[in-house]
Image (cartoon, rainbow, N blue to C red; front, side, top):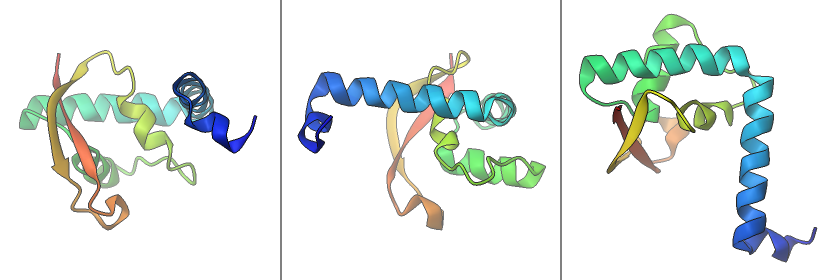
Length: 106
């Protein structure tokens, strides 16, 4: 694979899927725990973002260790949440003011 291959839609989607599968397999316990927390936060607050999930998981001592890509896998194909169509700007330093999806209960 060449670098230019990464910019084709089929290759990019395939690589994204493979990456999610790898992190999901490597961090299955963390992802299961964080998904439960995400659903709890969404039910309590009406929505959940990556920031609100990180904050709540931090209070509960739940974290992915060194594999920070695992945070994104929490929301991917979450059976109890759906994207609301909204974005919010991250306020946490590790979020670098990136746009975050706002998730709600299905």
